[in-house]
Length: 95
Image (cartoon, rainbow, N blue to C red):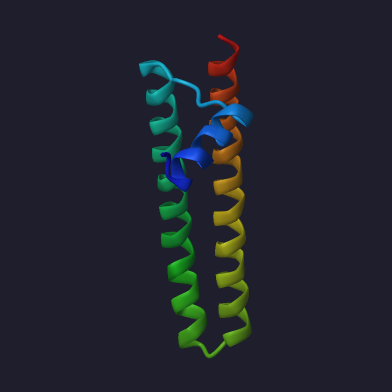
């Protein structure tokens, strides 16, 4: 008798079968993730200094704006990363 998990996984594989990625595709995805993390870290460092300066000056609205900017930039970079990864997965399923 199969568990609920096994049955759910069978249904999932019927609707969206898993794709096998080649070593090159895995490397591409790892490279994309690494670049995304680097870009996020770069923006965090750049905005951290600005945020600290604004906080020291008592400009709390500017601090909030900078924090919001960082959140938005992170989301944008993550979205771009997911789109690029999805493209690589689509290329894998075509082969």
